[in-house]
Length: 308
Image (cartoon, rainbow, N blue to C red):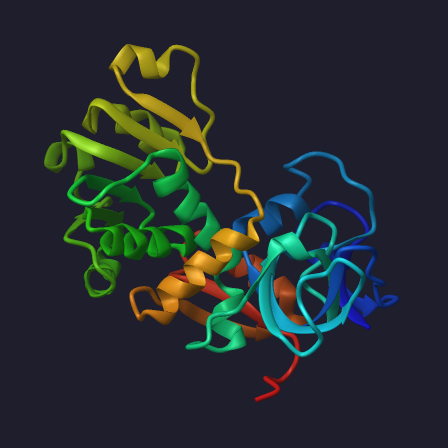
């Protein structure tokens, strides 16, 4: 089969589109014939060796949508079922087939295609777990989402609005109408406004940016509020200093939560935002775009033609 692998860590040029053996499922696993693969910032961080040393060569990619090809004993999905999943590092999403534990898999949303479904797993789970599992966001509360036009941010805006929260999003000015169209109640242009000058006494802040943005976010929370970051480590004593709670997200694969997200999408409450679709062979270009950090929504690689 065709796959995109790395044999060394480095820039986009280390991504190699090549032939590799088809993976074989073990007990409780299924093999998915991949139709589309999502691209995430974590992908290029892995490629650059920023998340630690791992066995090489490695097939890249974490997010897949496709059709169950083969299931072994204990698998809970049957051949022909349309599914999506967040696979583990090294299992490989940038490929024609992947093998994954059934517990990481869910039936894909009925109302959307494989391309949009492949955009969901990592970013959707990150937003869901940040807002609900960690911060416990509830109806009537307020949330500030940094990087609201990005992959995680665009899901977070929609999930928070679906929950009934008051949603403030930060992004560049060109994204104002986009963010309001997906549910943001208030928009802050980070290039021309300091968010702490216009927002405060908030229940939750979701930080997808880090650095100075993360450091300034403590002050806009109400006592007992929650700061969740997808990128920054929580400094010792930081939460206590400001009288708030804080945690760094470590996104986990969870088929049950993916199924919940699929239900919300099928209720027409949330829609994945895909702005770029490239063939699998152009994974290098996809990484270059993702690494620029200025993409809106998600980038997806088309692996095969939609069987429908």
